[in-house]
Length: 154
Image (cartoon, rainbow, N blue to C red):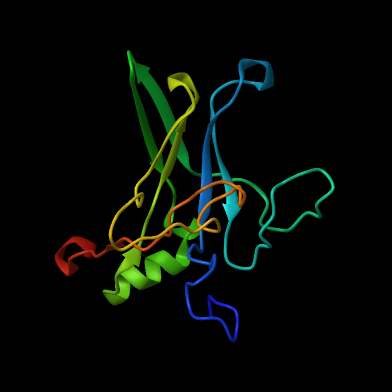
């Protein structure tokens, strides 16, 4: 159940995301490169990764993912690959032919604090602070559905 008992579903902020990853460029002073940081996964407590918060076995960077970000003038390109073993519930849903929901939030620090969310102002979505981290910012619910044709799965 993604809503509080006794409150109309989706009336207040609600859980709409199972997996969340931060795609980061690592500062040269910390070794440079890129990292895929796991923010949320099934069985992982929702938190903000402050030092005072307890650790969970799911915390940390994704070991076998690939990420690259390139800036060309005013355009930021990001490519990311996450193994199915990292998102097994998504793989199972696709194998069954079920639809999945996907959203993305892109922060571009090089463009004056610009931010884009895939679900922003779409008719199927609504404001939902629990869609992404941090909870205290405006976000849009992860309600955009995608499907995969069986012929592509084989």
